[in-house]
Image (tube, rainbow, N blue to C red; front, top):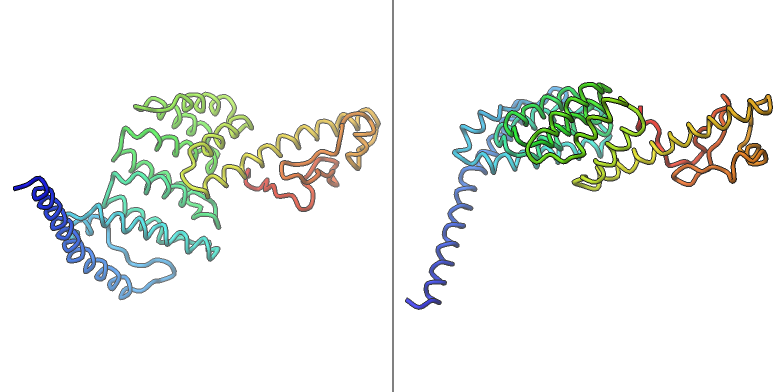
Length: 300
């Protein structure tokens, strides 16, 4: 047989194999998906609590196609979460069960643990507002993938931002820093959080790392918003210190930052990171001005 004939035979063989895989996928997965959807529709929903079989039950039914089925259910997770976000929903009752099914079908599907934890931990309406459930999901991921150090990073972020448990956050960063392949900044995070707790520098370091590692635009935008809010918080603290100095010098509080400019304490009207001038509030302290794009509530 000529080389062209051999090559053609190989291509034909590959096509037959691919065709067989497609046929088997259709034979196994499509009926299974239809059966699942039919069962879910039959059971109906009480509030958001739809009946969902366990991932282990799906493993039995999938006839070895657990990985493909896990991908299908991860897609369902993303679609479900996206619909809820667009609808500004405050309940995400199916999110946890869908993630459990997905990760039981494929315990190595790292993206489901990591992004699933973000979906669970974020406060409503951005997320489900269930950080403890997010921690449980990540712990299952650690058991299934013990050498994947980024799960410890994710644990630390949830302890830090959502639970304000700085001691646990520092421990998570420290343990993660000792896993194979961990980045050196994990030790820096552990030390910074242990020493400073929820201080400004530790927060800036964490959000800077989130920005650098952002896997999608939504997370990147969130990181930028938090970093700008932290910058504004730092600037407000500095302005408050100047306002106190001004009152000590003059014996009365300033009502406008122009008074500080006249006193030589400022060169120009201070503006927040979005370009809007700061104002002095009724309490005599600096505050964001009308129209500011900075959201200090992100830091609460």
